[in-house]
Length: 146
Image (cartoon, rainbow, N blue to C red; front, side, top):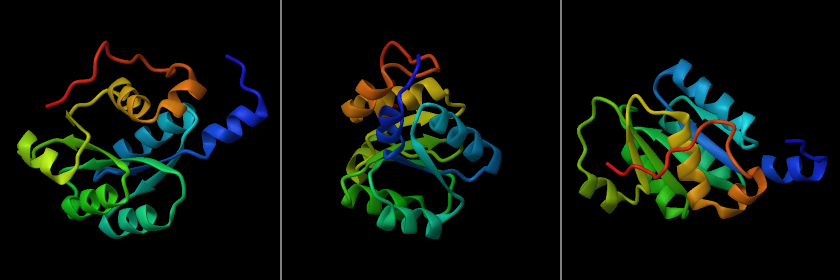
């Protein structure tokens, strides 16, 4: 698909914050999001994630690793700003009810696939879905909610 400059500029204004404990996973997610036209911001810890949530413009989603120290504060801050929160659950055993109460929109158990993340973001942000048409990754038939 060929993208004209104005469409690409519009897509790049949508920001996704990636708050992931593991540097390689954080970088890989950010790269894939960038490839799909989002401006991906990597947050390596609680303070970075909170600062980006408070200061970045056009944030459409925050991806948060539930093994990251301070994840509850990140979720609280994003939910208070009406930003979609996608949780990534590894060893942390958190119930769906607790995640719902905290304002998490979707939760995926690790290992995750990028298609799941892309589908969740596009489901939440219809403008992003219309502009990107379809992820370069494969999206699932339906979004899983754990």
